[in-house]
Length: 142
Image (tube, rainbow, N blue to C red; front, side, top):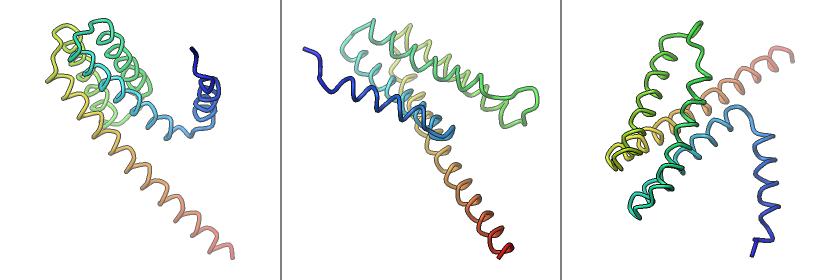
């Protein structure tokens, strides 16, 4: 039997995505990538190859999307390093898919959690700086 609230839940999720800031979307993607790996870990423990593959590929797709957003032409070294780091994580996930390597999975999972936390901190700092700048502008206009 279908969940009668599923349609409303999907609508809510769609609205959340459509109205999210770019920063919020990035955090949502990190959350999804982390969830894929949590599910992949459970699938490895349950010896479910199809679920392992589906969830690892889901995480890889998100990482590749992150890689596509990095401007390597005009970017600074940080972008190039981040691109290489994402590529390393994608390659680690191949190990997870091929060998059911829990150590590789845990490595990627932990790194994604650190990146998510780091981006959250950067978003908070940028918001505070923007608020301070706005306040200064308003003070000088008054």
